[in-house]
Image (cartoon, rainbow, N blue to C red; front, side, top):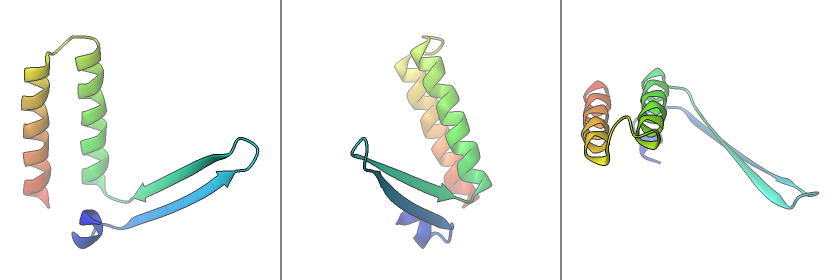
Length: 73
């Protein structure tokens, strides 16, 4: 909802696989800024998982990433 309020187009859809009884949800967000944010977030998660960075460094990077994103909005 925050993305929609910020004027970022968001499309949501759901479907049910009756054979497996699983709900499949999809969110499509058309924003280069969010694509960049998610990409960098995934990189940070991998670095944390492989212990290239520790949790303190991770939190610093996440704060910086979020501040960067917020300043671009």
